[in-house]
Amino acid sequence: MFEGIAKMSKPKIVFMGTPEFSVPSLEILMRNNYPLAAVVTQPDRPRGRGRHMVPSPVKACAQSHRLTILQPERVRNSEFIEHLRTLCPDIIVVAAFGQILPREIIELTPKGCVNVHPSLLPKYRGAAPVNWTIIRGETKTGVTIMLMDEGTDTGDILMQEETLLAPEETSGELHDRIAGMGADLLIKSIEMIATDTITRTPQDPSLATYAPRLKKEDGLIRWDSEVHHIVNLIRGLSPVPGAYSLLKGKMLKIFSATGEEALMKDMPGTVARETEKGLPVAAKNGYIYLQEVQMENKKRMPVHDFLRGFRISHGDILR
Image (cartoon, rainbow, N blue to C red; front, side, top):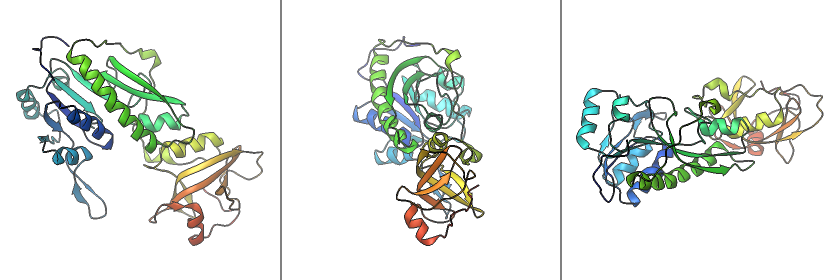
């Protein structure tokens, strides 16, 4: 797949991406003067209270640099695929595009279709690797540049870089770090792909783990869990979509918390008296100290500010 292209200073690229994670990879390609035949991103979607149509972060970036933008509703559309062929790209770069690519696109270019994936494959294949890495208590992660095939993140590994997680790092913070790491590794990979000096390493399927798309119920805090499990869930879903509990029948999102193990008498979910550490809530083997929260239909705020306007009594229950 890496052969059969005439020598050239830089390969022509079609870039496919949609959310903020994709933007550093697009920007680094532009900074390094790679010719971009087109930027493919998801169609504009309605957002906010007014449900106004909003472009993706990748589209906004591409517009600011006057790049050609394509927004197919379905990439499997034969007319779209034929249009891609007419662009004659040497490489397709994918970073969190948001649609499954058909074989016709994966095999369209002489140098292949490469993907920036935010985990150390084959661990955490799937839609939400950054979140699940933290939720499941991993202490290290990384980024993989992968040659795509028709499976879900199953293609050959081209390059990887590892990083340690900070003990209190949230998914939002890790997301931003990994996005930058992925962009840097992408440039190194493309340079080696262009000169046929890169090595393909097949994944070991026996080591695969999965990071499925997050569902609303994944964010519900189960207070009868151990302290470190609850803290990891809160970190892994902060800032979006947010771990949550129910307080007096209303959703309370929790964005920041610490945990402390202790011998427990209180029933899990029981609220104790406010301390300097935050608002303690009983878990299976200790207390979770809530530090930053958001009550349903209210603003996100530090818990001490929240408690000035919302009455919570010692003994109230979060469910």
